[in-house]
Amino acid sequence: MLQEYLRLNKNILIAFTASIVISALIAQILSEQTDYLNTTYTTIADYVIYFSVFSGLFYFDNRKKYRLASGRTNTTKLKNDLKKLVTSLGIAEIVYTVIRWILQYYFLTINYDPYLASIASQGISTIIYMIVVNLSVKITRLYKDGN
Image 1 (cartoon, rainbow, N blue to C red):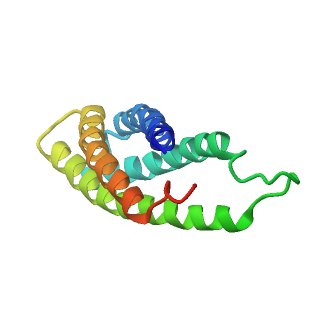
Image 2: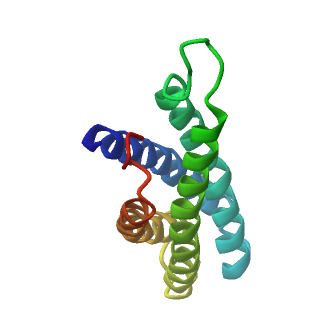
């Protein structure tokens, strides 16, 4: 069970690292845009990168977990775990998005460089996201009952 939590957190952190770097570059490239557009476009890029990287890592870490001896997929277990994962990530994503957007917009309005506003807002939001997602995973019991 502890290994499952560690793998999940590793995947989240790797995905956020990729997202932070690319989002900072995009924020700087879009530095001439108004603050709210820069924040919005950067947040969209953040999501595309994060979910692309996270999904790939999660798949590779868990692809054998749902295989039956016959080679078929245990769709019942997969569906149940995906519901729990989507619920856990969904709650955390709402919190993350609101905090990230507000912080980046605020940092831009007080004249942070766009790349720095993106990095700072994402860093703070990621810490809060990690807390919320881990609490949600415990509440949904994603890694309990033999999962």
